[in-house]
Image 1: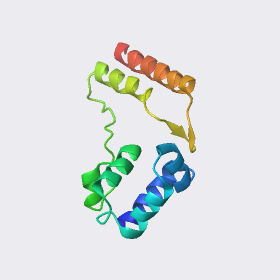
Image 2: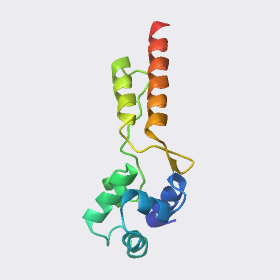
Image 3: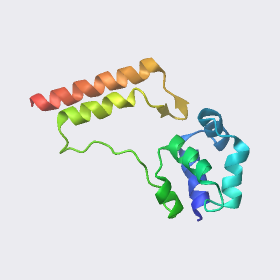
Length: 124
């Protein structure tokens, strides 16, 4: 499977369709179709960076034929304040569930519940 096919599959795993991704990210569908047909290496770096930024992917890994996220999830050995800071940043990100973007209230509830869970784990 080519990197372009894997990128398309990655988009379809995160969004209802490639078109849905294009609408939500502001990247024209024709631009993305060009990426799929011409290939990653024959596409302008500006376009690749836009796609990677919208998907939180590492552009260098994409050029190397891999799909790697730029997000670093907190690890169990992180300081609690680092985990809380990571959770707080989630509220400013676009979060989706089953292809639907979460509302601000839904994201606040997730952040609030996550903070409580971290604080409870500290007290144990």
